[in-house]
Length: 266
Image (cartoon, rainbow, N blue to C red; front, side):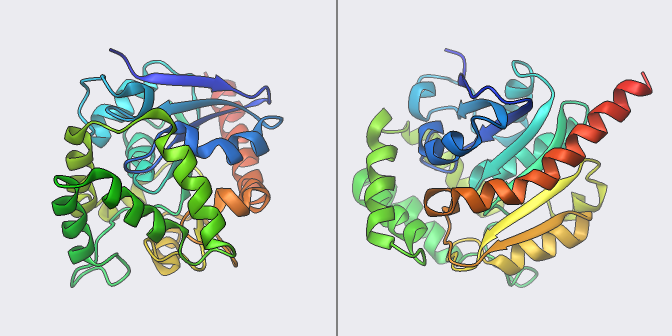
């Protein structure tokens, strides 16, 4: 089975949207709705997730980036959380296919260590991996609670997240485990100065999973634009979709200019 990619919206800006770990493209519905007049969107269910549950492609950033790029037009890519590592990989490896990069509460390295004070607690990631094998629903519930933490309305956001996340069934355990490995080992920090496309790094000030300093540091390394949404947590597209759209507008303009300039030189 191939990847499930839903084409939505009718705006002039082509945009690939990538969801986070254990989710599916449908969770991005509030952002899709807010962008439908601005963008023509290609909303991906990553391998093993949602309608791509039976896709045998490994949940590995380079493999996913190549597979998505093969069936979508040149576009700006937006990755939320784990999806950001895939979008960043595509921007680094396939700059002719990726016109711009939007990292939404996403970082080149997820877990904290001696060289990276801005990451999440590695014990938390290991606990998620261990718990997944015994109780998927309870583990995802805890992860969703972490994502909603810090928002203006954490109970309402958690309820909305829960409804959307479970709407397309359970992800394949294989890709949940692969995703945990990406979160534990993924690290593209050294490549950031080589990023050749314009980028926007959009964080939530109250994010408990991807601290805003990680986003600010990353933006500085690649000359990208940093944006912090004051009242948002890890999923700002739920309660602050308009602020996310506003933060994306300069990137869309720069990406369009880059595409026009590239065509002029061909």
